[in-house]
Length: 310
Image (cartoon, rainbow, N blue to C red):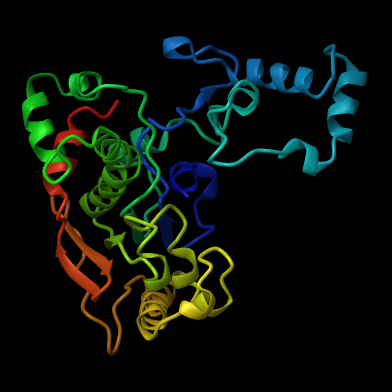
């Protein structure tokens, strides 16, 4: 969705935008240049395409190679391609992701938002409490090195309650850097441009899963957004479904429908969801106790990560 918001060719195709765990910074998978290698050894999209053809057993650059590529069934093209596998060698060495082609995507969404070149529409954006995050650090020293002079402050912000649990801390740094802070960044940029912007945090975990899950994983909000908890196979609710599970789905679905219809998620019998401001931290947190409008409880962490975003 961020790419659509940044693309000049998408103007007029939609009136609102909802972004669920969609990033917004240029850090998870930086956009590839069409024909030119990028910084830090990033391959061009053309180089990735050649690698993909070879992976499919296709050689050469002529008409026969092109015809062979076009004959590939869709199932083979996308085989093994998902967010969980994006960094394994098969996918990473042959798939570029969105491409900076100068026309459809002339610049990264982050840069477009900073320069005010985004679609002028209301946005609803957020991420989950146990969302995706990718961190290469293997020690606390490596993890906090990017924070420079603020390393001590970062340690203090991320370590409370997790003393000695490096893995949990690293995962939190990763999810804040890749999903949580970028969501706030997008919301703030749209607010600064004068658009209605609403941020959320999905922290709700189904009652039957609370012993196994420390928070709400990536994509776990979907059965609630569409009010399909009773039918969901993702969450494996089984016979453990509760009235609170169903109420959370009803409320979340109502917010999303209201926003789709009017550009404002608020409606009758729903806790008020405040708009975020250009420098604010207002969000709606979907918790075990119901939706709660509050100042982002992770504000200190987000502020620190904001200073090291690439």
